[in-house]
Amino acid sequence: SITHGKNLKEELVELDKKHFIHPTSNMKQLQEDGPTFIFTEGDGIYLKDVEGRKLIDSLSSLWNVNIGHGRKELAEVAKKQMEKLAFTSTFNNWSHEPVIRLAAEIAKWTPGDLNATFFTSGGSEANDTAFKTVRHYWKIKGLPEKKKIISRKLSYHGVAMGATSATGIEQFHTFTTSIAPDFHYVDSSVESLKELIAKEGADTIAAYISEPVQGSGGVNLPPQGYFQAVREICDENNILFIADEVICGFGRLGTNFGIERFGVIPDIITMAKGITSGYAPLGGMILSERLHNDIIEKTEGNFWHGYTYSGHPTAAAVALKNLEIIKNENLMDNVNIVGKQMLEGFEWIKEQNDNVDNVRGMGLLGAISLEKASKSVEPIGPKIVAKALEKGLICRSVIYDGQDTLAFAPPLIITKNQMDDMITIINESIKAVK
Ligand code: PLP
Figure 1 (cartoon, rainbow, N blue to C red):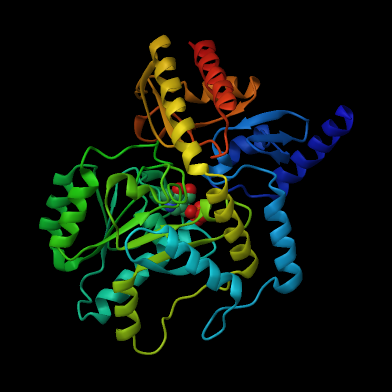
Figure 2 (spheres, rainbow, N blue to C red):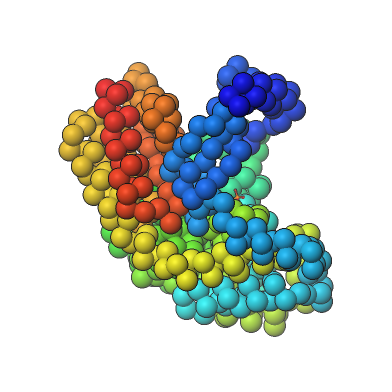
């Protein structure tokens, strides 16, 4: 009943405030307001909260619930695997069938010869793994000075020490007193990368990392021809190219991996999120055969890097089923069809609302930028998000770096009618805030 829902909510809010530390959150505001949602159920593109509100989840929760909420098939696979063998380590010479099958399956999804995967629990660990691996690689190649990592401004690579250091959003650095050394940042021009390499020296640089389309930084598409030029520059300077596919991988941009949209093959892919659609925590680093073989050949003793959950059997079983669903349900075709509709919808919104500055998207990853927020003008994104919520839609506002942007990444299963609903609510919410 509603009364019961209210009482339960009050109880949970109190416990939440006292005992639960929220990730990436405004702690003072949470103490004042409590959590906005306490979710109880999910079904397809919808989430339900403790008060019985049904809401469209236009960000697939955290850009990850790609096959939608409430998929029984994944629950069944997880249950079966847990009953049979919930967990065993893969350190040293131990292995198990789900992780072997998953690594082999991933090799079928990747471009080029990116055929070997090291597993982690998520994207931050995947990127830290990649940074340590590229440094190890150059060390065993006799080039230990090649250790700097280059990333892009407004990139998001996670919050482990290396991942935080690579992240190009200032707040994640200034939150703490020091980050890791040997990380450098470029803006999104080819010249900026060339200048940095000239300044630092190619013989000190291990790798370049980028998301194909930046997610958390505001859904920023690369300039025309950017990644092709970067690939050439990396090749000319012996710099490894890491594609951070944590958001873009496994269909979000309508291709297996996002970087394929730009006709480039990286040396390393890092991934997480979409590999399990969030049904179990899992991520990883995928290496090209050339790197993998070199590392096998030249590493003396151990590869001294591994997490307890590097190859979790239950997570691996869930991932295999998730990938099967993406293929069997032709979800990437849906991404291309409904993604186009989303972008057309955004254009339509722009035509009617003069406070909309710019709209953009690729596959089912999109953004609406509002009139540029200056220091004296308060961003209106958060107000639009609040309005959308009243109308039944959860969406995300990004206000880093003077932007005032709404970001969207609906589940890949979203139908045309559901996309119409989404567009209608966004339009009405923007109008209501004018
Ligand atoms: N890389 C990208 C592009 C991401 O979007 C994220 C998370 O949002 C991460 C890395 C970090 O992944 P995780 O939060 O699983 O550690």
